[in-house]
Length: 554
Image 1: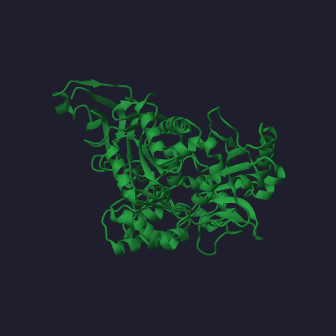
Image 2: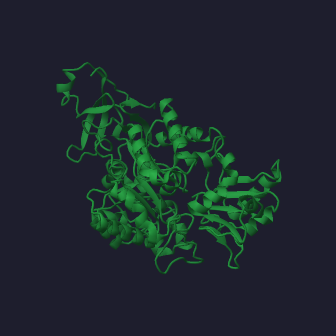
Image 3: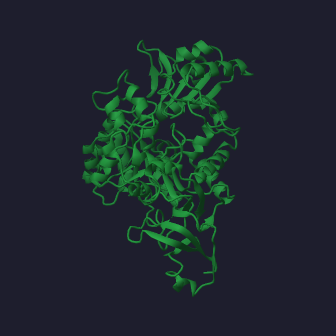
């Protein structure tokens, strides 16, 4: 044990409930050797040469934060397009200012069309948010800007692409075209919408060479890895592996970034089922087995991802009655709901963990029905079937999820950043206030994690902010507590970004807590989240991360 290093700290919170705190952690060969005090680890220190590294002596150490649901590569790709979103956003050329409303977005698109050097080439834009920018775009609005220059606008939550008539012609669709997710006006004309993966893939083909230009993926991975590291994240999972340029290309971009030292994270690649079926068909399970054999502790594959409804911020999720306040813009995924069980069954029988996207309460009902049917046909223990997002739900669904042995990975940021907005736009006050029912999950005994979905929704990547949202449930007005009975404790929230997030990714045997034998992944904070006012959790600074025992740079 030649590289034994001890990091003393003001306090260490281990997330090991049996040994919850310490004042020093010893690491070697990328793993935890001991945690406690300098005195308690003397049996190791007497036997092995070691260094005492005091760089974190005045800091607080937690296990490395885990965000179990991101889309870093695709997020970084969209960030290179013309930005029309509502909030200030980072980009390869610096900070870009948000646009407050639809009128300003249309003015920006008008300017981009007028300045387009080649009017036959489309203007590509990203970031539109129908809830906060006065409603959806459509074909007629975009034609009023330009009926000659093709316009292609992907929503911030990229469940919708909006196009004008010249872009529809490039895509090759007309009023007689049939396809899931191709939107229409009430009179049957195409309205310029392409909703969810099948339709969005069709709309993207004519611009793919530009959106996915040479080298785009590696640059995106590098860019977003730095964002994640700054937030204290040491492990994440990409839940749409396969739709951003191809399975092998995406894998290679992450592998090369890790090899070159520009991606300071561990990442699990979770394949999007639709892309996997299209790419590998009957060989899909063999392909996943080959990638698991190729994977290692930094880059590996895990599970399978299904998308069963639309987006919370785009207002395309599926709700039970009474439904939407105004027009029903709900949309399902590309797999018909009556076929979901059959599509899941091969992976379920193979012991592969299922991650099932469900934002609306009606979709959660369908997902729970699917899990019950899978259990009926082929009973499994410790399957860790995970409902992703779990935005609009009720307490009965939490109890049923617990009874079926399922988990939840929740985007709790929406409580602060979106819920009050959607009380008026889309979902109504009752469901919006109760977004992200963590208290109900906790009372039902469901293990859950907190995630960001970054950067494909209008929220940050900041696990401490997620914890703050979960503990306080303060609305965007800065004062209203939304559904106070759904708040959880600071300790429970911190578990959800460490050990319970590791459980959701089936890696809690090696990640998520500071325990002997686990990977030496640490997040170093300026203040103690257990000691500060819970209302200040989101203001705690991230000082550094440690990955496999190696500091990543303050």
